Length: 252
Image (tube, rainbow, N blue to C red; front, side, top):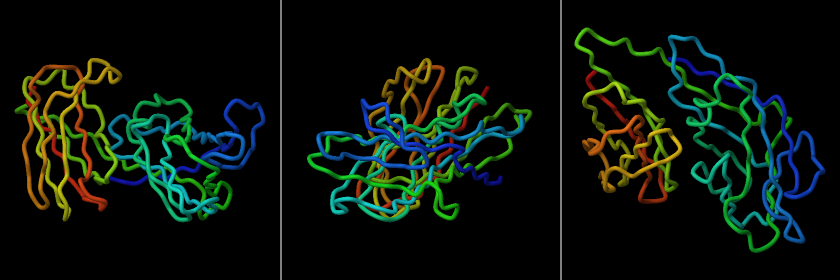
């Protein structure tokens, strides 16, 4: 297992509905006259060896200026599911694993925007140029697990559960006869998880009821229905963070 780090090859911000673009600038939020600032980060294609898989990918950004720093902005990356609350100056992270694993050897374009309606002027500016604090895409890469003679499949990944709902990567389970999850909550607060299934990674169905896993406990979940893809949703029930370890095991 090893870590790859990438800086964007291009960053820009713009006002929604306006053609003017600010290069080398990352602004997100609302300015006067109900104008909303959005931003784009472009990364070169993420290339790994055929015998490797992407385990986890995190976008790290540093907020250097915050107009109305007491106002929280829920900032999203590409879709509403990938979001983080930004209050003021400091370092922030977004789990973008699903975006990186689906970029298909093309440039990765990360679109940054505020999720919620903002009542008054509130803009967050992230560092775009300083090489010590500019955005970093940090990717954990591991070797693919070989299929043993008895055809057992085993995916093990660590995640951090926060108060925002997050998801594991989609797993193609179409060739598995039976598969199930083990989830270990190593944190000090309770988490809630559920299984989601999909035929194409776009149409999503919640296959199980929400299951609460208490701190320092392990639980087992098995899908009730068949599908091509399966993943796990998870979040922390408090404002703290909990490290969780997820096993997806199955038989071919």
